[in-house]
Length: 59
View 1: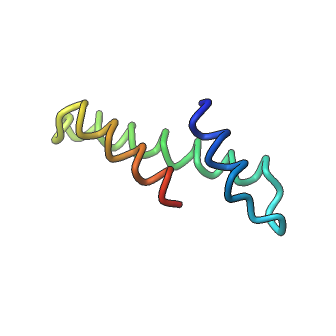
View 2: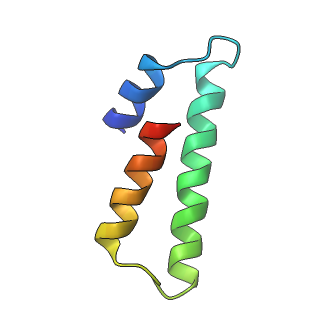
View 3: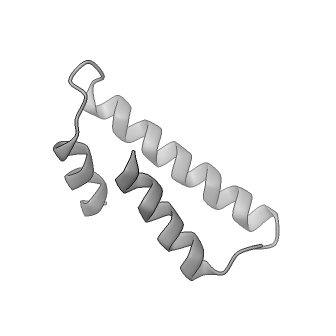
């Protein structure tokens, strides 16, 4: 969660409240994790973690 806070704080779009931005990121993460589990973990955990971090940091 610390990485999310730092990323959000660094590139915050002031026109969108921070709590909405955080909720969006958390929902996207949870949905992707659910998809990954429901589909038999088609990618290794390490790749999923690295990919999620890259996506969060990029956006």
